[in-house]
Amino acid sequence: VQLVESGGDLVQPGGSLGLSCAASGRTDAMGWFRQAPGKEREFVVAINWSGVTNYADSAKGRFTISQDVVKNTVFLQMNSLKPEDTAVYYCAAGGSSYGLGIPKSYDYWGQGTQVTVSS
Image (cartoon, rainbow, N blue to C red; front, side, top):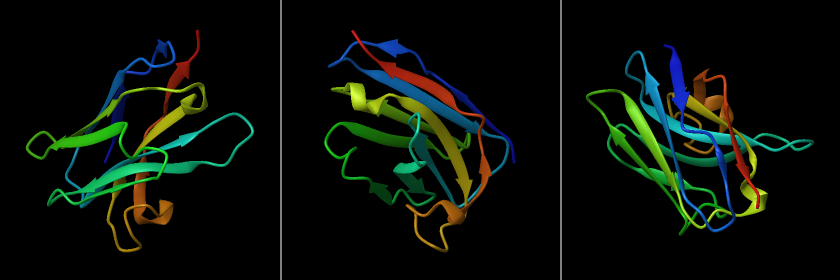
C-alpha cells in the first residue's frame, strides 16, 4: 500500500489547514502522526474503517479527521493552529490490533508533509 499526502503549508497562528492522504489500497485504519524538530514522533489522530476515531489530547476540539472509504482517503482539518503544531505530519495506514494511537499498529507510512505555523 502506498500513501500520498498533500496539504502541508505555512499558516499563521489561529489559522486553518487541511491535509489529505490517499492510500492505494484498503486498510483497517488510517491516521496521522507528527514529528517536530528534536522531538519524538507523536500520535495526532486516527480513524478505522467503521468510523471510530481516536484523538490525541492536543488535537481534541481543534482537529477533525474524516474519510472517504471508497477512495481510501483520509482528511485532516486543522483549526486554531498554534506554533507548537509545527511539525512534519505523517500519514499512516494499517491495522488497529494495538490500538489506533499506537505506531506499531501501522504497516505503511507516507513520506510526510511539512506544516509550519508562524507569523
